[in-house]
Amino acid sequence: MHIRRRRGWEIPEALATPEAVYLSRRGVLGAGAAMLAGGVMAGPAAAQRVGDAADPSAGLYPAAQNPRYTLDRPVTPEAKASVVNNYYEFSYGKNVAPSMTRFQRRPWLVKIDGLVEKPQELGIDDLLKKVQLEERLYRHRCVEAWSMAVPWTGFAMKDLVALANPASGAKYVRMETFLDPKIAPNQKDFRYPWPYVEGLTLEEATNELAFLVTGVYGKPAPNQFGAPLRLVTPWKYGFKSIKGIVRFTFTDKQPLSYWEEVQGAEYGFWANVNPKVPHPRWSQASEEDITTGERRPTLIFNGYGAFVADLYKGRENAKIWF
Image 1 (tube, one colour):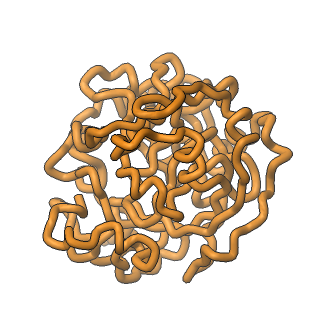
Image 2: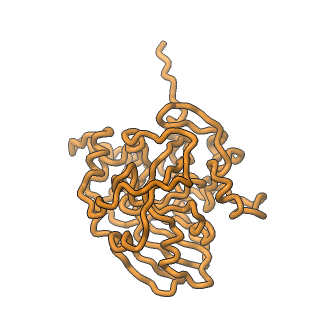
Image 3: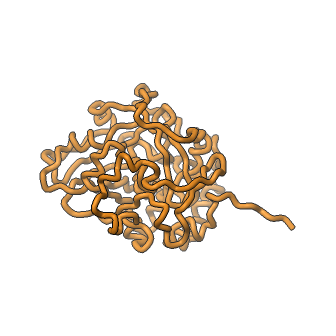
């Protein structure tokens, strides 16, 4: 009898995928049929080609690496990291790039509004002229219990906050991704609350770890990584790291994030990595490296407690993990 041994990060789809998405079989089948009909070739080579489109910021890469942020494991090979991405606007599978052939990252406008001194709208290349890019090596922990290590290039989110100059009443930053069903097929599904929304407290947004990413592996980020602008918060589960950002709104009200609205019993506002708090349908006590298959214990705050634990002092008994 043939026995297939499933790797740890290959969680059964009914478990790994949030229930609301898992139940959307018509969308999954439709996307698969469209790929077959169009003759799209899947795999790492296709993923690389999608990210190789001309980018006017290419001359800014590679950026100098910041030695303050180091890893306890090797960097995940680009060919592997490029085909393990969650981007539900385009696909419910992990190899997202073949579904992004219509995606264009220029022109790209970023709006800054809400409780700020001067609302503004900047082209992404104009924004890049106002910040200093650097490379940081960060661990990435998905809520699905797999992990990787990535060399991100970008700038500290606190620099964008300083550019916005929020008013004294601002307590949160609400982020919003693009909305264009013509290029993102799953945004046509009216059952889901598009566009994707995420939020941070102002204290989280100005923590030194909060990073706005424009590149990866020493070059402009391929589309499936969230180009041309995404968030990375390495102490939180990956779904907090919103991709394709077009708007930052400073507000006095806690934003309702996308997964909170879809499945609030399982995905909350905070999403801090904690091995002691299981997801309602699986354990978070350990994680599997997508490259080696090695399982290791999950670290509180994904190992970044020295940077962020003070943000949550006094809230130890509060529901700050999901």
